Length: 257
Length: 166
Image 1 (cartoon, rainbow over the protein chains, first blue to last red):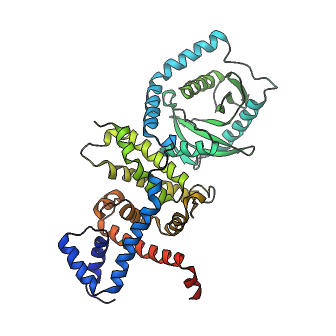
Image 2: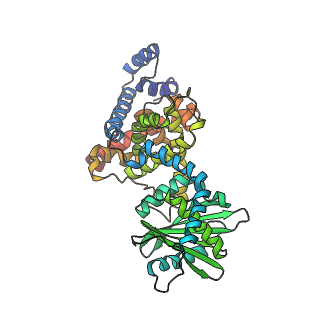
Image 3: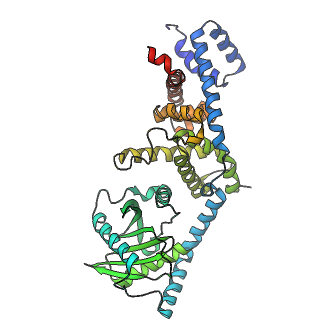
């Protein structure tokens, strides 16, 4: 125990156990160990640990790869996102034209509408609660976007995307998980240079039918909501309906990509 | 030549194995690996071909792990199950894995990371020091404490009867 070589030997003993010593030093350590049974036992235990770790976790290296970990898919998704930003303006304009050309995309909110309206009401109250938060507006900040998306996708049971609204002057600040009638909902918050915030609320929806933007206005807030399997979306902004609709269209176009 | 998808695919086994041992759960490991790959792809232009890819990726993964742990600690009271403190091995993982998961989960993160980088992944102490951005002396002392603790934990787990007698 009070061996004067002990401190020097400790680092070297580990190197010895990990086969990281030069042949000369390894021979010297081996000779020293012959007279130190306790250290010999320790070295053997460390080597056994290495072997045991490898035996236990090797299998995970070669398990079938889940699709979300395939670098080819991830790289392709990334390329689409990059292209998507460039194509966003064009797509937004095209949708705008289609929307007004056919009048199909913009419908007035119907009193009987239902699943979408519930969604909008939930989103509106979530917006009011969190948008005034200064210190904790979000649970996971935008700096962890990849984690945020992975986490919320897992909770909502579907891969989801976070729209990029930088071209519209809004940057993502982050998101959180919210309960919606015992179902999980995802809540993303954006902010512009003037600290004006908007939120996007989404949860699983299996409602069939064509995508239609609907509007709900309440106390200066505009909710634009639409159902687009597998999710229902509600965008809440403190803005007039034409601005809110433009943003909703941009989001929809981007999610379509 | 410098095709990121192909290069990343080749490094995937080590990353998955390390992430699984580090987090103690398959799902958290997959999250960590996915985040790591996404970050690597987004920073690919920072990766230089003369660098070794493997330590570069492990550095990214380590930094993601550290910030995820920090985040989890901050909201521990809200989202307890996100980074489980104890092991959550699936039943199919086998007894050997479950025993190691339990023992590793009891080690401080800083000891577990060194232990796994060296013992499981075979990095040299100098490489581990660069990945962890820590002096090599610290790496060795963490390794030493980690191995000592793991030895005691595994011995206790392997012979529960002896422990009871004492």
